[in-house]
Image (cartoon, rainbow, N blue to C red; front, side, top):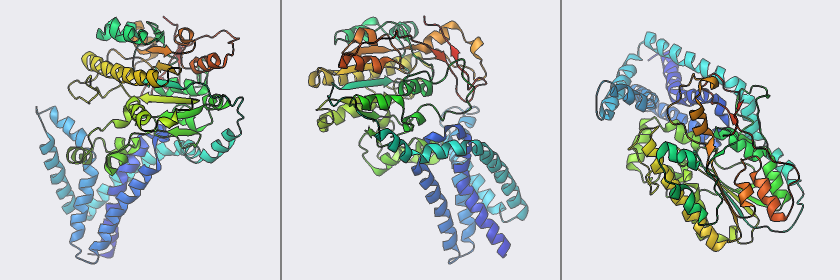
Length: 508
């Protein structure tokens, strides 16, 4: 084997192992705030393992290089396991995973043998480098925003640590629950036939104020929760069109947001319980982050959103989830259950009062759940029955936690406020705002609000911008001087033509 060929084999093995990581970065270049150090360490270790195997082959037999090439090709193709499986299902009913596995093994074997040919190697190099060039090109404009978000934690801490407390009094705890995608009681009845007694009456019996129909500040999580942290509307119909989400949720958590300053000024500690999607725990030490206790290192490893999403379509994910002990793949998304467990084992966190606990539960958002909150693949989204089942799971979790809070912290304020409602059907990606029906907008903007505690009747009518301020001012006895105006805006995600714009929506 010539020296040049040996070097090309080495380069080919490295490219096949590292390219999926770069492809994933390029595909998600507008979402760089979700990438953690764990993802990059995974990329380094994953690639180094192939380099190590290649170096070892130099001391054994050069024929082993072909086997390592086979492994590299197999590694590369297995990341498309789910995509190939979905393609084959078009032509064949039932399970196709064994056909896909055989196909990947066969192609990997042919590619490894063919790689002895210079022409074939050059063909693979051209394909890989062209795709890498596209991925890197996409990453260039996002690099600056990513580095600022990733490395500015120290500055944020220094700035926020200078915030002076206006009082040393410990006011009652506030529990802020975000059930992702839980629409208003009116829409629950219209869309999935959930009865009044399930959506309102049980809450009212516990002392909650529950409006039948209320609008969220925005129709998308990254905007509505940014409004919560900014305590203002981060973007309006008059704003400049934005090109990425670097100023919204979850990135806004690291930028000393007004909510964090306001809570500190009133002597509140910020306890946050994020879902898997929500960027994980903030890097800033100004937050106390709670996560579920993992049962294994594997479970802990896959509690990282970037890592889990990177592997979700791969054969590796299917093998690990089937044969390794990981009972609840979405444990982090069940935030209220995490808090309930912590309150039973570590009640001292809340015992002195003055704690604002934000729980972002990724329920009733897909994947759908049964009423006992176990995951189910019975329904294909969007599904009224699947959504209905997940809503009952949501209510069960919230009632279980609120019962515990009311019993142990009777003076605490409890806020249940969803980030947006539900789309009644699949929305085409190319659809523009003017093409949305009033019904679709109403279903998506309608948000579930329920408030128990100080000033609950007024607070329950407010959206994310003013609700926390209103509750704390009630607790400290401060009077609201300016009239509060709820506004609502309709925004978009990256895959749509109007991403970067928002449109004012009149409240129904």
